[in-house]
Image (tube, rainbow, N blue to C red; front, side, top):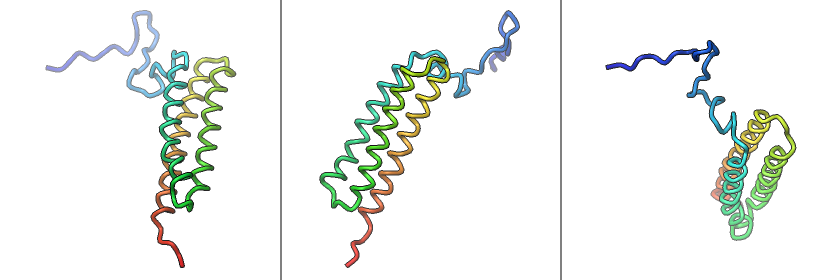
Length: 125
């Protein structure tokens, strides 16, 4: 049996937000932003572990990339914190915080990929 379709409007006639759309998720609509700070901090710590290993224990060939990535990620986390305490409009604040978190993930992914390519490349004589 199929379920009855959900009405697209509430009882007062206003349109209901589609809960499956990314923009309608609670973390982007009505959160206080604490989840972005906690998860961003955890992500930063977890990402700095392999970058730190490349800086201090690696061959040193990819240390420059790892240092730059670490500094950019720390800056993005600082921007995330700045957004939490500096932006008054809730929706804008949450979107900026989410953008900072996504940028941190992109920087970590690209930097670790580049570092792996540098470390795996043959050493020229």
